[in-house]
Length: 217
Image (cartoon, rainbow, N blue to C red; front, side, top):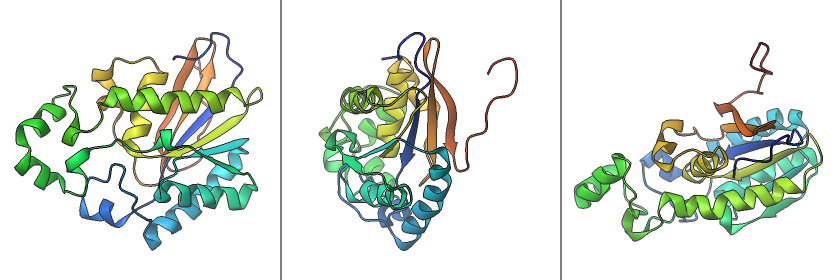
């Protein structure tokens, strides 16, 4: 899924939701539907003012309320409608959901260690990371296909879901996806469509992406 050679110059902004109470408590959220905190709403509002400067053509969002409320801040500024898709939800992590990482390590130590080593693990009996990519990346690509040349799509989703989607869209081996690192609340990554497909332009950004000025632009 590495885009089309000689692509049309489209751009994907993959934006993580704002802060939640479970983020502060270090709890694994997964598909649990947790709202934004007041700080999370403020983060979304600030980020939306920046992202509006990219003149997005469309917004697609996870239907979980922390993502939907984040997307709503950008929609309020741009006047764009939001398309909601449950395929953009965070990784389902079964019995891990609602537990802190310390609690997970104490109760499911071997499974937790295997996950940290990069082994394909159904965390808490839930989804594999590759299965998350199997549902998230096609949603992004279907929405991207509706963009005009050089159009920008904003995808509002969740940290783990975004990382797997980026890995899949760039054609990276799943074992290497962890090397992309996590996204802070309300930060985003930007993929651009170049001559050989999608390429990562910005990662975990909190300000407007700057053009690459140099030989590798």
